[in-house]
Image 1 (cartoon, helix red, strand yellow):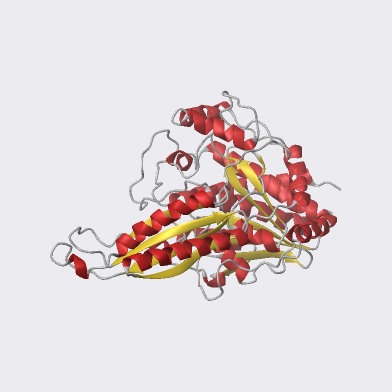
Image 2: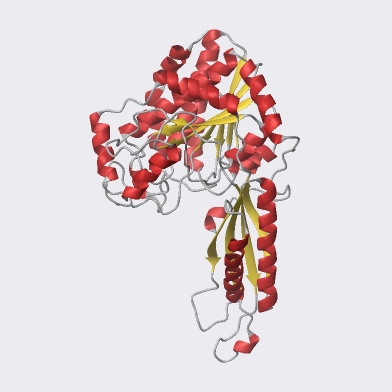
Length: 474
């Protein structure tokens, strides 16, 4: 029995409500672990829709777990709502214009859409279960701090996915289709060096520079880059350079490293090498160094069973229905982009370049020869313990770089709303397919076990480390 048109109708029934939620979150951008208003807006809507809501789970005040339904399989639908610093931008225009009063933050990765779209899908599944009288539970996870804070990693570590049968999520993108299951394991580590301050001119011999240690560490890591696998990535940001006075030997300095590799074992090995370089820098400068893991993600484990099930729903639905007004604004945005951004989007999706395609007009095939740009996501940790699938929703002009003002500008546009609703229909229909044919769940679980080959999930964040709620402060 195929009830796809029924679930689409249930999504459409709550469309305006969830579009308004997405816009409300866009208006109050909040960075990792500070999403108080955004979380509260989701809680308010979840309660209005009849979900039983738990707040502040896993030690994170802005994390949410909300459930509806009785007994039966548990389908998790994952939402996010954190913004990014430095990406404040007026909506609906095609020029860089930050908005005063937003603290400099902006939804430059589309998470205002991500959270509301996931909630739209979850609400439709809840309503479908009630209408059909089918046993099953839909659970919405409001996940804070995806942008570097690893909110889902803490949720998984706390056991909040232990009884989940499968997980579904999505992310805004240029194109519509099943997201490739490629993401690097990633650890963010702070190295704090402590030396001894002194007068840089009168008594330099008495000083031991923590800033020198940071610089020497960076040089050492740079040399290491030649001797690591080509898929790995190491980046850094200096959080504390020791002050602004050049005539003072800096007694304290702090640097944050992001260390990525293709899997958890490779990541842990690379983190250990970076740690040794930090210790070497401390030895050379006669300083002390303290290492603190602040966040970590696992690599993403794909699931072909769920990917095929989701692709079937994409193919049944077809591409989003954008109109000429949508394409006109998208073309204004594209005029601000580097042509290479646009070409890279087509390469990443495995589609032939089409200079006239301002907005997605096709569904990306599952076997498209993709060349995606690889990053990291805390969805990876969920995928180690639950069969997981992720959609891409076409919410922006083709070629829009993420973490950019152009993406923020499109966050309240009609084409962004249409892409969000389109993704919600696919997610909800995928959940319904699994609830109707529970063989999908059985096969997905078997595939996950086969892919892990006996590996047991171990959180990349040690048990004694709490969520870094002050991470946004550096």
